Each structure stands twice: as structure tokens, then as C-alpha cells.
Length: 139
Image 1 (spheres, one colour):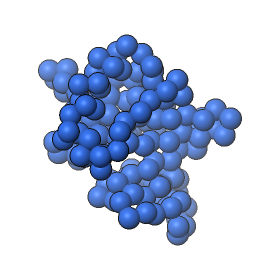
Image 2 (cartoon, one colour):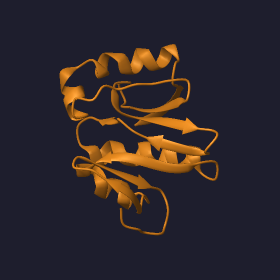
Image 3 (tube, helix red, strand yellow):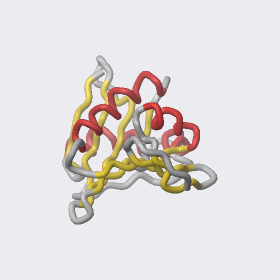
Image 4 (cartoon, helix red, strand yellow):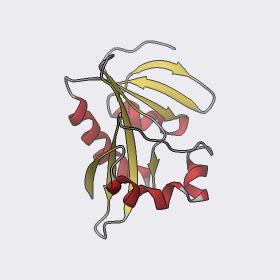
């Protein structure tokens, strides 16, 4: 698996992701919420050996607050195969520059927790907002 990092408004992003985010099954994976991007986004896109997209994490960076947030992501197939490479690329990108957060689907909470997202900021019915770090606190 190869991780490609692309700007939130680059032509390459649309080339790789647009065919996926318009599929009903991919939207359903995201609880029918649309995907979005901006100049504040950096996308981490997992590609298999055939250069087919098998997952992505959009990362929205707020320079003023020095925060970065994963939100509205997608992982095809077996998530435990795609997740480790994507999350490591994001953590490496953010290390010592930004406070890293993720709005994760409840079903993926354990994956994010195992990857170091131990601080629960807020919980909803379908999602949990987590922060990368060592200390634990309740929502």
C-alpha cells in the first residue's frame, strides 16, 4: 500500500477521490454525509498495488489554532489493513506541529484509540471526537 498526500484543491485529489465520493456505497459508509474539501485540507490517500484508492483521510488544518482534524474519512474492505498506514502518515505529518483530533465513527473508536487517540473530547450517537495524546478524560 502506498500513501499519497495531496492538497485539498489539487487536480490529483479530484482524479483519485471524485469517482469514489459520488458512489452511493461510499456515501452510505459515511452515514450519508457528503465529503468536502478546501484549501485548508490535506488528503492522505491509500492506494493499493494497482493504484486503486482503498481509503482516505481528509485532514483539515487550522493554522491559527494549530489544530488538525480528521473527519469524513473512508476505508474500503478490511479496515484494519488500510487504517494503520493512513493513520501513521497523518500522525507523522502532524507531529509537534498541530494538536491532532479525529471525528471517528463509533465503530472505529477502538482503531483510533489503539493508534494513540486516548482523549475523548465529545461523544454523539454515531461519532466520537478524539484527541491524539496520552491522558484520558471523559466527554
